[in-house]
Length: 222
Image (cartoon, rainbow, N blue to C red; front, top):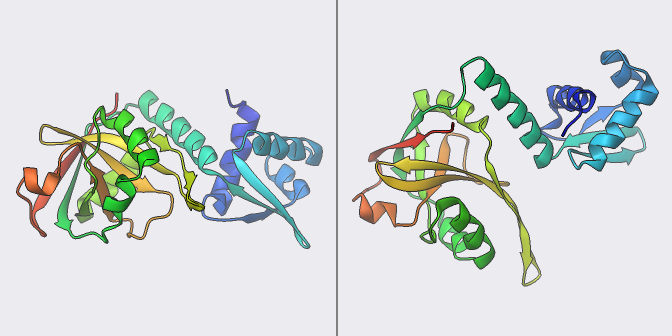
């Protein structure tokens, strides 16, 4: 379990911009901002690094720190816990968007056995090799921020044929009565207002969808 002191430091790094990229940190100034000694701040940073919640790199002008995906997940869990305490978490949430054509990458990635096996565990069935791409309405973009705070399932990256495939995260959802999951690649070519949805069935064909049609995705997390 993440210690309170480590969580305090992790949150401080995130507030400095550490989730977006490397931020410069000195143990002296970082400790001062958290009312702790430089030695304690240094120990906390080493602890976070040891737990793989941050990455640290030394450069000629000092150390730079980045919050890792594991670190972001820890912060999301903390946010979700507080949301439940104050009655703001759990949903259900509705995301409405219009169908758009994708780049064709979803079909390829969903055909890879290492990805398919992991997504099958989330869906409970083998996923259709492809994704449904939705451009969210302006109202749903605000809802998506709440959905982003829920605890997602990590999809591990892997190496195949000397090529590295990155990690992703996924969250179960439904479209009408069809079990689905939202997928967010670690590196996405889509803007923030576009989501990708997978399902055991070909959603376009099953729901007779064309570009421009509106679709509502239901997310519920107890």
